[in-house]
Length: 199
Image 1 (cartoon, rainbow, N blue to C red):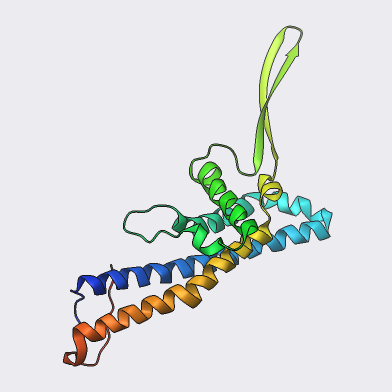
Image 2 (image 1 turned 120 degrees about the horizontal axis):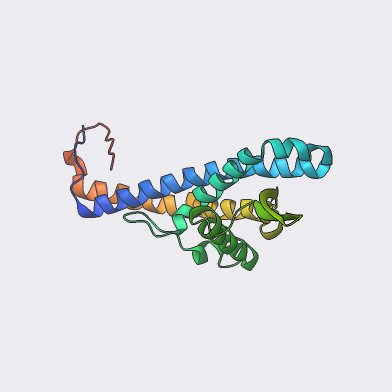
């Protein structure tokens, strides 16, 4: 049974490999969530009477969409001791997807993480004056900013582009580096077994 990872190089490769495994899983989760939003959007376009049903599930839609954005964008932001992805590496040959990616990150930063503006609705204040009496009230209305600013299909294409590069290039390369380093450092001295490392 392998018991510890002590070599710094092995630990580095292990950590990066594990990060990319998690990134790939987060991208797959984001894809599935976004797919629900796309299906809902298409359903409404096909049958306008579904708008009322959408209104009843508005908060669920916002939660699902916000989660998809967070799962996708978290790896493009600096986090201590985590791998940070560089958008230019994934979208260097596709300006449209790079622009969509930037809008998704802006959406995450301004509307979800820091709440500079509301994501999908607009509040307003109503001042009523009647016979010199003043009264304030408020109301809100759905205003799907996302539908106007970001194509959900382009967002899905961003997820696919990042996922596929990680799945076909990054992970195989890191797996090879990690396995080679393990063979060099542990060689024939280790017995058969497995190692589960949680870091």
